[in-house]
Image: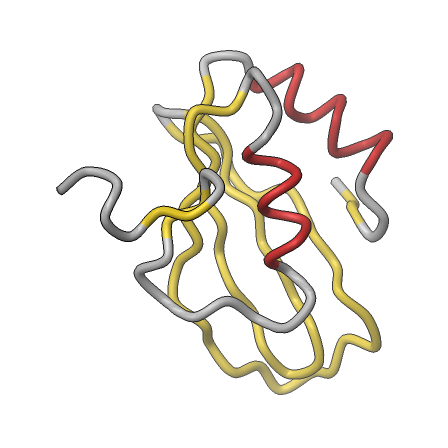
Length: 99
């Protein structure tokens, strides 16, 4: 049952905001990443013109990212034992990433 809702390293329990899935699949393919778990989608008042990723608070198991696209926002949890490697990847390889 462990891999029942996982595809390409991304857990699919909730929906994913448009444009975020390819980024999450690339992130999950990194050797330092154990899992990528998107949270619930919430509606925001402001409007983001394009997909943006921001670093949230660090967690016991890795990192939390906040994704925004249009009027939708979504938390993404990255399970890793090497958060600095993941941050380095995000800084250099992912368009729209901000700290």
